[in-house]
Amino acid sequence: MYLTNDTVHAFAKARHKEMSFPFLKENGELLSLASTAQMLIEPKALKHYKDFYSQAISFNETYPQYYRFTLRICLDLEDLGLTGHVGKKLCNYVRENHFLDYDTSDSRRLETLSLLRRRLKPNTVEKEHRLRLLDNIDRFIAHPHCFSRLNKPFFYELTHIIFFLTEYGSTSWPLSRSGEDCIKVMGALAFLDNDCDLLAEVCICYSFLGLECPQLWVRAVDDNLAALEIRYDTDVKSTLNSSTDEYHPYIVMNWRKALKHEPCFTERFEGRRPNFILSGQETSILSKLSERVHDVRFNKSSKLLAQENFYQDLTEEEAKALEALQLSDKNINELLKDYSYGVL
Image 1 (spheres, one colour):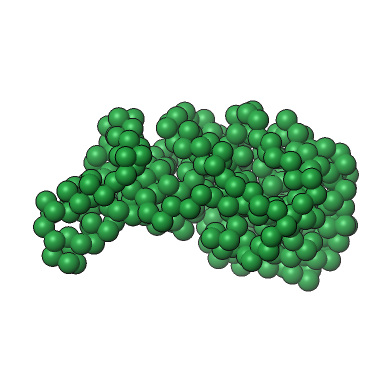
Image 2 (cartoon, helix red, strand yellow):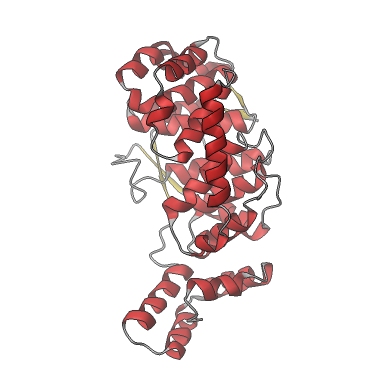
């Protein structure tokens, strides 16, 4: 499979100014996808990154707060065929300047360690950091019931931890606890919330852990990708605002397909600036359930009324989706009961 020059141009040149934060974020994710899914990149597509690559060391010195993006892009470019040793130089720079000590979360420290290991043999400090992180993460996934409350930042922490701990599926899971119980809960809640971005990341985690992902979730992700609309040459107000640009779901939904060697990135941008839009849904099964729970606990509604309203408020499509989820996993009703504080 190839990541074509057409796709690369759309992200590297058409959408954002080079070296802007959106450029770093989007191209970092696009190149990671290609590298981890063992995709080939059209040789002429690499030219779009030559200026960035040649200035990466100076850029990193000027904007050290973005070092993970800069380092990952350079490492992936080299692994995808760009000739040079900037990645190793950046690894040494990160180590010599003790950037690992200034990361603000376990997942970020883990990402830094994962990046450094791609070019450098771990030193004593990095080995000690990794052991502490493994201990923290082992405790983190020991309580899957904590994941039965919708907490998306919390959920994305775990998906990213799985990415980094498995080196994007290239190494075995290093902990005694598999984490499968946690990602099952996350996937079910993402499905109920019609959150194709999170659900795609959960499906990817299944691949990296060597587990079989529920086909119901896979179909939901692929259906959302098929429904995604692409408009061209419109203003992209902010790539961090999901209401204006859904580039991240577009990337991760295609990533899931790439990992399974299925056709991906089939769109033809033809040099235009794409803006990605998901067909909006103001409500979801989970949002309706949350509303009923709130009614019962804070507005003194009866439990029976809440149950009736919840099921009556579901559209025919939502009712079928909920039934399909319940049939696919015998533990879903227990999760719904836990999520609803026993209202259902």
